Image 1 (cartoon, one colour):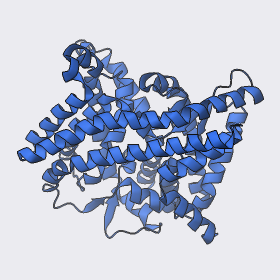
Image 2 (cartoon, rainbow, N blue to C red):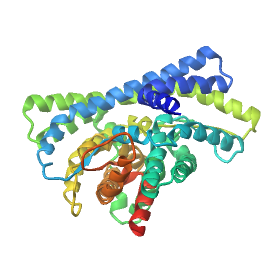
Image 3 (tube, helix red, strand yellow):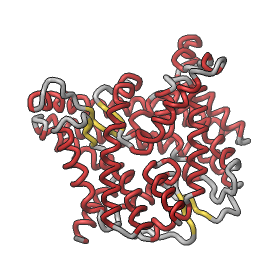
Image 4 (cartoon, rainbow, N blue to C red):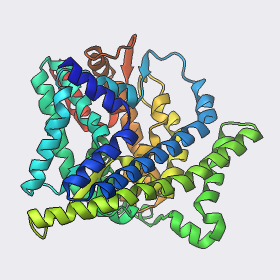
Amino acid sequence: MDALLDFFQSFINLGAAVMLPFVITILGVFFKMKVGPAAKAGLMVGIGFQGLCLAVNLLITTIKPVMTYYEQMGSGYDVLEIGFAALGGASWTVPFAVFAIPAIVILNLILVRLKVTKVLNVDIWNYMHFLVPGALAYALFGSAWLGFGVTILLSVVTLFFAQKLAPKWGEFFGLEGTTCTTLAFSSWVYPITYGLNWIMDRIPGVRDIDVDLSKVEAKLGVFGDPAFIGLIVGVFLGVLTHQPVPSILTICMGIAAVMVLIPRMVGIMMEGLSPLGTAANAYMKSHIGEDSDLYIGMDIALGLGDPSCITCTAIMIPMTILLAFLVPDMRFFPLGILAEVCYLAPMCVMNSNGNVFRSLVCMIIIMYMTLFFANLFADEATQMMAVTGVHFDGMVTASHFGWNPGNLLISAIDKLIH
């Protein structure tokens, strides 16, 4: 059992860029693609995702001076905010984790075969979104069976939210045949931002505010191009944090590069996903029926290609620091979360139809909730980490305890019971 767990952990630790080519190739062969085209599709998805990771890391590196500027405010807190990578790695060490991948995959295939869902979730890296709440339930209530059940239940719940948002996702981002199966964003951020936009549609004055970068580009010509918008955002961040001129120029070029590179990397991923989606739909129609189209469930990062996402991300970084000071009895400084702000943007931008004003309103509200709950549930987060193989001294928390609906529900139940 330990050897099997070590194998899964080692495989997961390789990251999505390595796992995806294997998963896509196997799925392609399963859906009757020839081995060569299936392997090519897998490679293109892996290459695109690797490029996407590099572009996101470039964004994080670019804004490092901005984060360092705010880091000086971060002394005196007694809770450490850890990143999602450490949290995800820890979740794979609980006893039932080794059974999670095959159980989730097999159940997903059964539900697709029975026409219960049209979503096939290939985003194995983000199974951590299901495992973390499962590990939390195991830590708080002492039952591995309960933890396993929570993990499986959340994997199924995600499929229904992913199917609901799939048409809008495909149309808005140009990602036809795919959907987002990242739990925190498809099952939490998506419905909340949908509701927030419904409310804004009914507020006179607010409903008429429309800051759409595609319209800005049409009116301003080359100065409305995403690359130039990146320059402008870079100047804004640099001046706001009192950076020297050389640093401002570096920030400008970094953000401009990200605005151009991320859509290109998403395009490379789609070169691989498109033939897989075609083969999957042909397979489903031949085996299940003509109305059996299939959506391929992917990471939220696939939606980062819209220029509004990067623009809103850059603006939200200093805003997140400000929001942290507005949380009552705040016990941690949100440095790790700053590197995750970009993943909050796609659902907010999508539900706002690219309206930057509305997107920022949604991101501000969701981010405040994230910081509030991550602070409130630090005790539960610490208990969860205590039963894993990854240990930290003192209290810890993470973004998942602020925007993962499974963690929110389980932590709230624990608070009520105890």
